[in-house]
Length: 61
Image (tube, rainbow, N blue to C red):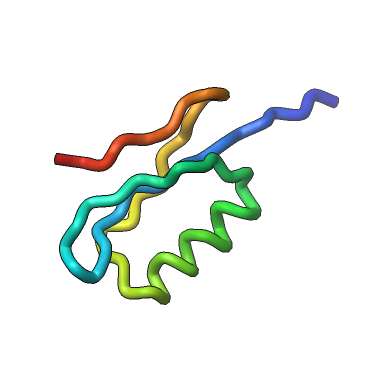
C-alpha cells in the first residue's frame, strides 16, 4: 500500500481587508481544522493551496 503525503497552505483575506498566506503547511486533517478556524474568525476568500515540501503559498495581489 502506497501512502501519498499531501500538504496544504492557505491564502485568505483577514477581516481588515489584508491579504494573508499561511506560514506553515498542514496535512489534510489539520487543513480541514484550520480552514474552519479561519472562516470562524471572519476571514474571507479562504483558499486551500496544495504545496510541495519546503514551499509555502504567497498572498494574492
